[in-house]
Image (cartoon, rainbow, N blue to C red; front, side, top):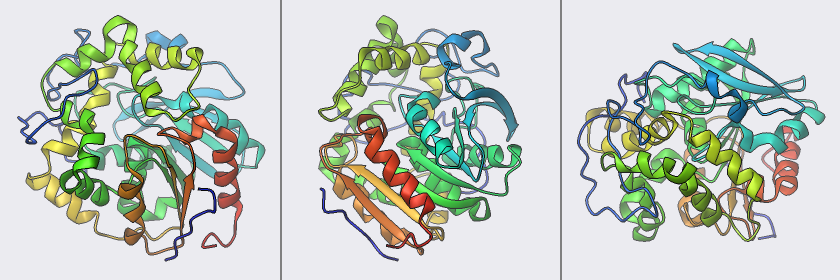
Length: 358
């Protein structure tokens, strides 16, 4: 395992989404939403997560471009994907509070570079099904590997940001034969994330929104209030100096306003905290001790206010394969959008590099 810094600076699906009480200790106030409950509760706009999808909100999700939209079935649900190009599969996983469209720059660039680029909406988000359960990371990772199989591919290079990165780490451990390479942005390895959140007061404060999500009802309501204005504030606050334009922010606000999206978006974070001392969580983190054995690219913005560089940088200890660390100087939590050219060049060059340990 090698680390490289540039000069510039679970068990099988655990079933139901978390619904038990949470008491993570002191809970710093969320800058906007400060609450949440389990799977049975209604979303802030009065809609509980059900077996439906966002089919009636296609204009907010199926945005036109040089890609094609379709739905695929996997792991007992239906997932919306946008795909572009032909070649080895690269599957892109979004984070919070976004959806597939966050990868619009990389979709076309990867296709031009000779890859089959596919960006999927995670369970409960965008155009994918909003199921009442299944938001634990083990099950969400099986969604990802199920989509790989449904696309008829033997494996994929996984590229994940934020929560999508957490799931990419998980999938690489749970289904290693289906993951050819792993690229993660703005997310430590799950065990590193847990350790940082519990032992580093500065990281705990930086991730205060996750503690806030453990309280009932309010996060959903605040996420969708005033046409999801909080989504725009979070994206701008978490970005570096290169702020997103109003059109991009409005796109994410519309997607979050789709009924049940806010509730489903928060559910994974509830599990991540509430399970820490429960048998299912202990078993999951024990399982994540298994090393990642595929070439791994770890990307991070030096100004990320949500996940500290120190929290992410120790993840290489969980990789027993070529590991490359890249720190983007002057970028925040969304490097793939803040500087899509630099991010995409780094990703494409690494994907094509026959010696990724350099």
